[in-house]
Image 1 (cartoon, rainbow, N blue to C red):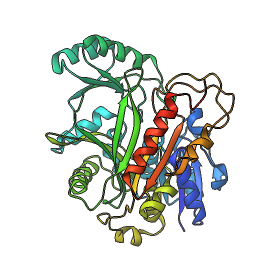
Image 2: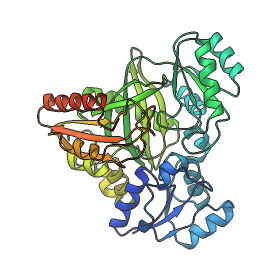
Image 3: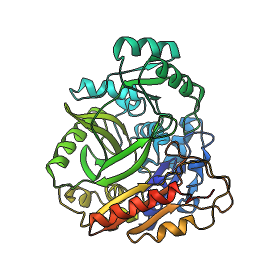
Length: 412
């Protein structure tokens, strides 16, 4: 069995460490920064690791320590670990992504440039260092619906939809004044055209330059109270469909353009009138998912496929990502708390489990504790999977859940 180092084993990275540990793989943990945001740190599973090296500022020292443990591969657990994981694989000489394009796997402006240079579609956009620069460029290049967001964050963190230059100014000022979800200061912002179409995300795994898709999901989002989009729900796309084939071809070309050869990747795209257009790609596992539930429903998850690529490359190569797998209607519902709740009711999590089609709930009720209004991914109370042979039953329970939320599910 290989020895695997995981950088920032948080979020879905905690599912990866558990899956590897269950296969008898020795895991070593590395922190990508001196401190980790509390939202992520609480998902860490220290028992899965032989050792947690913590944060080691000196790269030469860190490489030496990883070599001493016999590390065969370095993997990013979440978005904040992408650059360091790729850098360490390069320094160790272990399989990884192309180092020449490492910046384009975090910097969304460089990402768009790399994709455009490969002849693929990406939004018109620009990275700006000031509010004035953002407003001036927007007025000259777009002057219509736009998106303003941090250059290197994830989820819907400080993503703002803007209609005019005044809204671009306000959104840019907010982003520059804030820290991203990983705790880092936003020193630049990205201003892009707002794409119109149907949004999808693709969870893939690459090994030695060969790509496989584990999951394709169709997003449904809604405007949040601050003007930022918030997640509503997502539904899987049949991998044997013509739609999946179009998405697969585009995503594989994007992965090649970004130098993603040996890692997981989470790609978001918009299917527009001009075809698929990249929103962004993260060279890591997708978040806000329960891999065990997805694997039970479809036979595979991105996490299980990544584990295959690490411990059993032959089975990874044999995996047919075009075969139909979903045998029921599935919807992953993001929980939305409509107002600030001063004190949570003690039973709201249990009530979700009573929905007839609910098969899994990822949420944590803390009776009596405050619950913030949902304005982005981080402030969502969690998510729930609804599954049925009949799509109408899933829709019925989805509507019931949204009705409960409007009438005080979480507390008053």
